[in-house]
Length: 264
Image 1 (tube, rainbow, N blue to C red):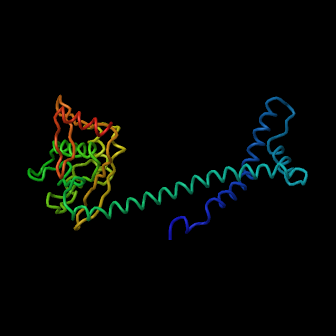
Image 2: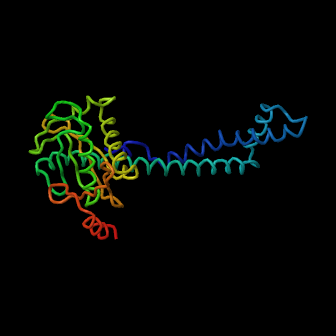
Image 3: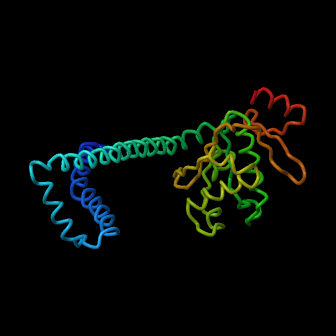
């Protein structure tokens, strides 16, 4: 049973609560404002409690029901607005949760299919498996691959898997982070993109995590970029694009021709 169906109807409930708030909260608060205005310009203004007591009881008299109805309607409208907002928020949250679950379930399938023009495997984010140490130069390799996907049709970069699709896990990478958890890993990925490719591109990547073969792996989902993406290497700006199951560097003429076609 979904979150929404397991609760009371959201909009009618908010309208009802809003109507009650209109009478019991908005009306007294408005009277406080009226009393304050009177007290500022009149030395004979009644005390606040006396003023509220008299005016609130008036609302129960038939000739003053229009006031009670007005505040009821105001509260109901406010409740309706909050109800619509809450319903839409919960629906969006459910849709996001469902999409995330689908993406996580996709990871083992992509690994089983091997590397393609839309899928690449990397053993680690910054841990050098061969030298058994941190190697921040590997972050450039990650940035290069992401740039290639940005400039092509997007794709999936799976970290924690060797070239043959064997899960290696993220334990070594996580141990290098100040906070060894998934949130810190995702922030590190965003930092790599921001530092090497441009902070405006961070919204075009999303990282999910999945257990595969008993190991924790990460999948960076990369959408096509809205502009040409260059990787800064020293004083050079290098253009990479995904070609087959590898990332290829284009020379100046190739990059210009490709960019003119890709972002025309």
